[in-house]
Length: 70
Image (cartoon, rainbow, N blue to C red; front, top):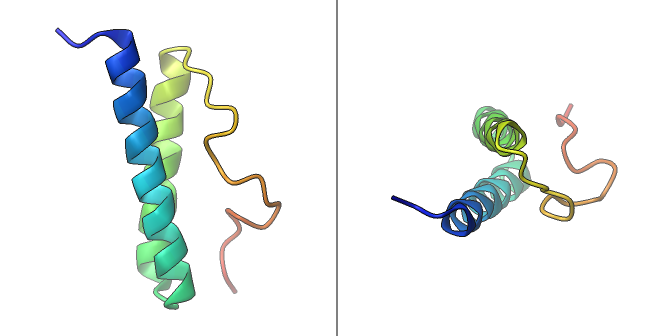
């Protein structure tokens, strides 16, 4: 059985990977992929919240970071 600290490390790693994939998709102009990665980050943050995991500092703090490109 996985310990909570292992769960948190795995969760943070998955969020980091999805966030990086989102950045790349945005930079490449792949809007569909960007939306998919953005949704994955949100799903992972929701999972963290359900398990009372503090994710402060895990996501870029830039105000425009999670806005859709127009």
